Length: 283
Ligand SMILES: [Zn+2]
Image (tube, rainbow, N blue to C red):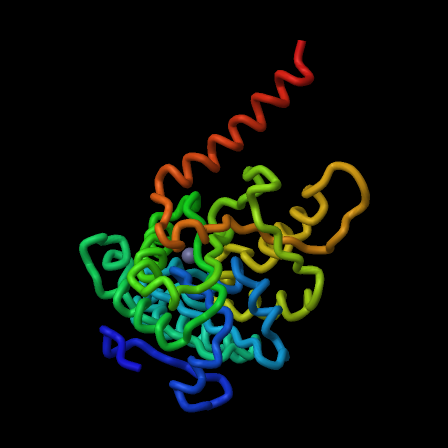
C-alpha cells in the first residue's frame, strides 16, 4: 500500500501481511487527529472487538506536530510531539485490537486546502482495498475546521468510487460539539454500555493530550453517560452510555444529496422542534 507521503505509516497490531490485514476490514473510522477515533468511534471498535468476521481499521490523517503540550511534554519539539502522538495512536490500536491503523501524516494546512487532492486520493485508495461496510468520520456541524475538512474529504473520496464499491453507511460522529441538538428521529444513537473498562483504556493511552491539561478521558466517558441519561425524559435509563452520530449516508448514495442543504435541513429540523414546543405549551 503506497500513500502519497513517504512518512505515512500502516501499523498492524497482529503483524498480518498489509493487504490481508486491510482486506479483512468491515468497519473503518477516519479522523483528523490522534485520539479522535477513540473519542468519537468507540461503537465500531467495540462492535469488532473479539468478533469473528468483524474488523476495525483506524485512519488518522494529520501528523500531530502542532498539538498543544504541557507537563511532561512541555519541552517537546514539534517533531518529538509528532512521534509521541503517533506512538499513542499505535498503543490504542493494539489495545483495541484494530485490524490496522493508518497514519497518513499530513500537516493540518494540507487537509484544509480544498485544492489539494492528495488526501482524497489516499483515502479513495484505502477504501478500495479495505472495502469497509461502515465508515465513521467527523460530523459536519463540528466546530473544528480540520474535523469538518476531513469529513468533506471522506465524502469526496467515497463519491469518487463506483456506487457498487462504496460503503453501505457513513456516520458523522461527535468530538468538538456533540449532537444532542439533533432531533431524536434524525440522529443515530450507539449503545456504549458494554466494556467501559476498554473504552477508558482506549482514551487513557493519549497521555500527551490529557497530561497537557485536557481531561478528554473523563469528559468523553461523562458525555456518554450524560447522553444515556438525558436521551429520554420519561422512563429509566435504557443504557449506561450513548454516543450520537449524524447519518451522512444520503451524501454518498447515487445520486448524492448536496452537502450544504443536507446540513441546513438538520438544523432547520432542530429549529422547528424548539419553536413548535414553545407554541405548544406557550400562552
Ligand atoms: Zn481532533
